[in-house]
Image 1 (cartoon, rainbow, N blue to C red):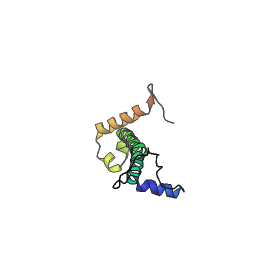
Image 2: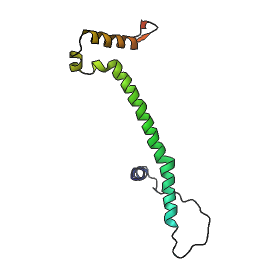
Image 3: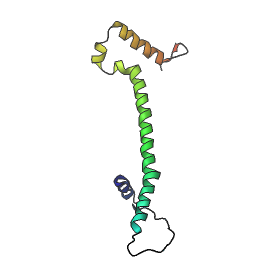
Length: 112
């Protein structure tokens, strides 16, 4: 809520929620209805915008981490010289084979 209000003030938009017109009914002396309308607008913002944005960010991050794990599986042995130094012969062959498979198409190496 605070971040959304800051963004709205930065772009020059008044950070307020539109108040929906409510049906008029008789009010009793101890009843205060204005706070309920504001809370309803804030709840609508939370459900319609904020929760949707958080869900989209969560899905995006999850897919990025899946991609990062796939890239780590292919290129992970090249990330640091210390990890490359501790690999023995068969492990180096396995890593190089994985790298070759990643860059091949129909049995041909496709390096650009």
